[in-house]
Length: 194
Ligand SMILES: Cc1cc2nc3c(=O)[nH]c(=O)nc-3n(C[C@H](O)[C@H](O)[C@H](O)COP(=O)(O)OP(=O)(O)OC[C@H]3O[C@@H](n4cnc5c(N)ncnc54)[C@H](O)[C@@H]3O)c2cc1C
Image (cartoon, rainbow, N blue to C red; front, side, top):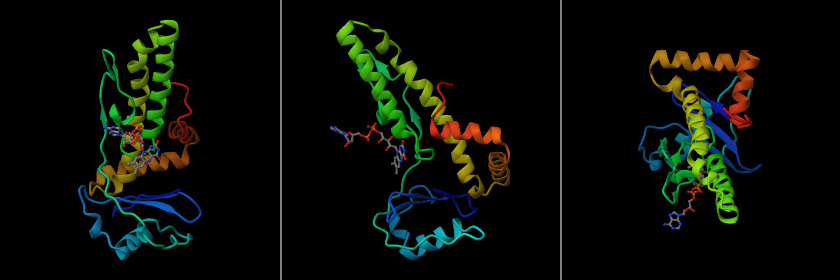
């Protein structure tokens, strides 16, 4: 994976296979995908992902273009009587830190276990604590996603203060092993609990 923090806007490369790659390019909210021609996409990718000594991205055919809204949303609590919400129905997290599906799966596993306990052992405790247990992780990932979003987009805000603090976060990641380890733990989601 490759991330470009650039004054023109963020760019990212997430290879899906040796032949197919998903690229991200920051654009104004509500922009029209048709205003991004083949030429414009590749010019901006080369510009934003350029690094000294690194080859430019290999140009290829664009097979799909979409403009995504960066929505963040939490419904709290995630239960009402016998209604239980899970996944994106309960919380949206912009695809910054790749957390949405992880959260959806976590909800589904907890809810599945809670339903089995209720139906086989008449144990209500899992369902009673379901929302609280899920939301703990939801808020943790929302906060991490916001933090990472500022790292990715700070340089392009046109605000020297936000650009400066975004760069400070990046420098810390690359110079402090403790900061790097904390980042890795949150990015991979390996922390037992926060
Ligand atoms: C571009 C992009 C990249 C992403 N990348 C990542 C990533 O790398 N890692 C990650 O963890 N997350 C990622 N996410 C987020 C992730 O895709 C979602 O958080 C996840 O799919 C949510 O799962 P879900 O089951 O709650 O909802 P969904 O996956 O949306 O599933 C809901 C399903 O319900 C169906 N449905 C809707 N209405 C009805 C109805 N009335 N009747 C019957 N069926 C219905 C829909 O068709 C859909 O199949 C990304 C999202 C986007 C948009």
